[in-house]
Length: 408
Image 1 (cartoon, rainbow, N blue to C red):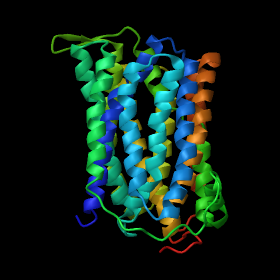
Image 2: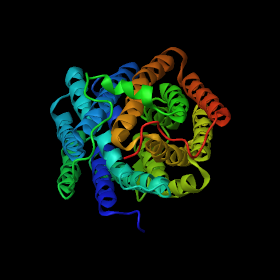
Image 3: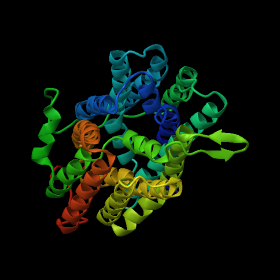
Image 4: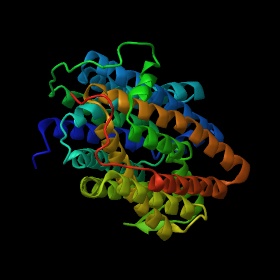
């Protein structure tokens, strides 16, 4: 397949390995945090703060990447910080240090995200943009499936051994960093926005095309009520309660079943991302994203009523389809609208806004859960997703609309 260039392959493998490292820990973190004394509200604040750290830095480092005309230095350092943060969780259990370690991991994500997506966009043509981003998201999510599956197997034999798991997660993380050194790049044209302060990436809004201005605010409203997946894991754990299953002579408790459901979601996500990219190239980004938002509405509406184990698996199946229909497709949509010299800035602007919204989303979800219960938390998110879907359906859209700054 011609669109699978060497750069696309390497970046996809890097994301796969980095996600193995991250997702080995992600399903375990809420359980670990509860063990060391974090409340649901404090977990919400933690996730909001660390996502804010990633978000506010994505715009800045995206613009810095466009200013320098380089992508790889940001990608290398970003993945290195992510790998380094994994064993640090084993050393620090006090809340302030947990906040610091999780923030370091998210800062690494902020460093690399816009520059990496700009590298991917440079490998695209108008006909295969959805395929490129869909393939990358699929590979990324294969890692996101392998990671919790490895954690699940590990915890079956070594229950409660979280410290050793944090050390093991460092290995695929540092391997992902090593792979990046196989890539080379030439300096590209610098940003047309010029140099500026930390928040100078916000100036991109002035030169963005009309379609970018229509869709990005809608996505940000949705992000404001799309809290961390940790809340899905918590509601799954709450819904399962004390139920157990037996597999291969071993009793699977609620924690194991929760991780298993998350693995299943990632498998569906991984398998669906590339087909979703193909659909986006053929049918248009808007139709595919709308389908994803409607699936999100069904999933969160379903979780609001604390379903049983079988229904939970079905909802995670739908959630995997939702992620495939939105994550990579939205990135492809935005990079198509961005000018070539400002691609990382455009991605960073959106990603920063999304992560800032995530700060409030997780805090809101934690507070609403604490004050009104899990049902209202999930119904609220479902209603907002439906509202955004209606808005995007009614909004004007043209396949030919591009940013007002020229693609170079």
